[in-house]
Length: 72
Image (cartoon, rainbow, N blue to C red):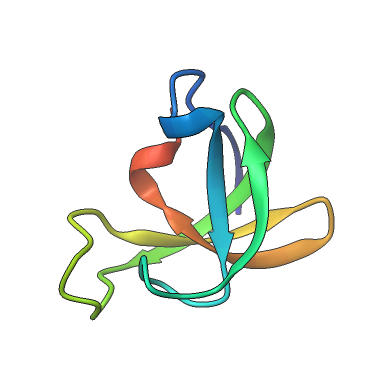
């Protein structure tokens, strides 16, 4: 995993950390714009909606998935 910052201009000022890869999955926590998280391997979601890959993310001890488009 590699430390990466959430984009400062991310939509609504935060990036959703989800339980699984895809926009339809439950939100674990909202990571604020500019915050740093540990980002690992990425996969294409099977939700039929997302245009970007989702990556494994760890933020303040919480683990989940977030859109690759949300990181600088």
